[in-house]
Image (cartoon, rainbow, N blue to C red):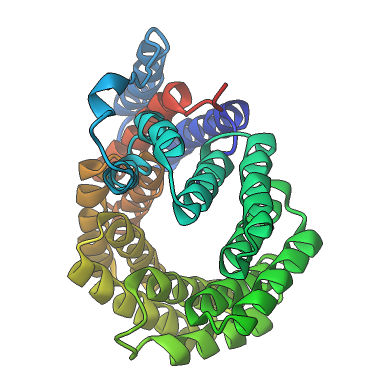
Length: 363
């Protein structure tokens, strides 16, 4: 999950690190395949390595000179922002600020406001996220553009959903967006909003309604060439997730775990064709966890190795937490204690890094 604030992120990473180190200690103590000297050395290694990281303050520095971006068009700046937003949010803000300055047409101005709102939703503060989306709404209303207004309502609903956890208000804005999308016969916006509404049901643990909506969306989109990748892939990821959650609630129904893997594989096929490294990482990690849960350990390691490679390549540090943990769990299940401890230690060190590199809200 993406960070909502630096202080919250730090608390989460501290808890995760302590949990990781505690797990290493528990495993080493309970294991009969290593002696006490090995336990002491391996456990101390984790703690000492973490303390070593405490002596360094990691930070992402913006090395881009804004003057060098003057010749860039709005479209070029947007492309640059999109290529950096997930792997280096701090640097992406440089392109985003220039997008806001360079936006000329109505569509560009609303688009830049909505992009800034999205960025603040994930990496900044609710106040700024709402400021940008309200600017988009005001502009769309002034220019009497119902298509752009629908997109802005959808974005505002998402802020209430993601940042405020105010699902009732989020639902109200989603309905406003859906109403405009239907009036404008905007199929893509209708699908996008319906997906967000399904996610609301999933979050309030009404998995049956969520699943029904996700399956309807899948039937509407998967075999349609006109539906873009960006609309299809979230539906497949959601289906894989909801089936996995249903299985976790009722492990006697293996068909639910198989369904999770089925939709995960379909999503991975699309992601590989699109060469979308972020989605490849997400789906291979999810499929690795499903394989581990199904006790298919070799298959799990294959997926998790791919997830580790792609996550490292594009610096998806958040995803690496899960990858390292589950690789350790797989090796633990295989009674490969040294490999298990190695990945639990690696995760502890990784969490220490994240503790000092978590992005801060923009001033």
